[in-house]
Length: 96
Ligand SMILES: O=C(O)CC1=CCC(=O)O1
Image (tube, rainbow, N blue to C red; front, side, top):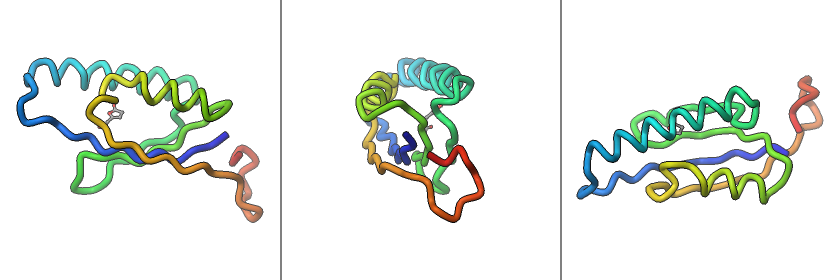
């Protein structure tokens, strides 16, 4: 199942900068692991914001929930999820 996931990262003003850099490094490592696995299919930066738009390919809602809530930056994120399905005109067989 494909999902569009929009993530806004909110950096708390009082966060320890070194701690936040550690969390960002952990987030990047987890992202690249999931990207290699084909689960986190795409990511784009939203211009001018500390936000991204991503496409996830997971088995079900529960898998996506567990994955998102386990992200290192999850405590600092606002997340919006939109379920997607294949457009009938798509030429891509894997759009589902
Ligand atoms: O920078 C972000 O938008 C948050 C994030 C997601 C994957 C990653 O490496 O950082």
